[in-house]
Image 1 (cartoon, helix red, strand yellow):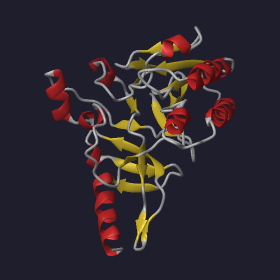
Image 2 (cartoon, one colour):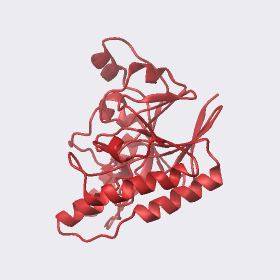
Image 3 (cartoon, helix red, strand yellow):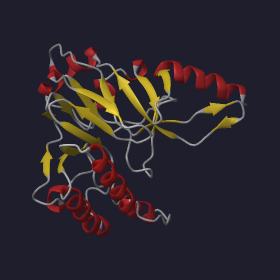
Image 4 (cartoon, one colour):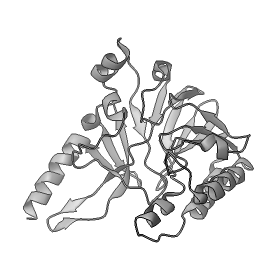
Length: 260
């Protein structure tokens, strides 16, 4: 039996079956260059991310480290920062564990940067040891839904908790949501069933978050049509269960209304 559990206080998922797979998503190496072009000078987070992942690999002793999309940030081009940092980042991790990547929408050109020992799976996803993985910007291979466990990313789920005098900074969060039978039937032309999808928060702290607590009209790829977001359950990194997303949105709406 394959099971998935978050690492407490970390945006990391450990999937255990016949193998142990440590999952990190949305590293967006090179986002600092993008911010610099917009006038913001931010130190590179790549070294900190490498140090953090290396420590978790040593603690958890996984058989594989799976990077679930958007290892790099800039597209359709590749920045000098990415050309320097991505190969070194992947090479260092490959010295400690088998590293695999499921391609995300920002990973254009990643195959030219990755060391040969890093396996890159297509954006349509992959199944490893009973778990199906896909980034979420595009529709996965329907065979992925036959897995015991489903894991996606792409949304950078986060919540901005509000009180009567306002709201605090966004906090990264987990979302576990059921599949949308209507959306899947419309796309694949047949009924598709499967387990709930665990949506992994972004590993890079500089990444913006999808505002789970307030409905957004921003287009976020296929994932919002693959799952029923409103029926998903939201958890903070420390394990706090905030309940169903629709309830979180209702509570936040009332609280911010009182604060006006």
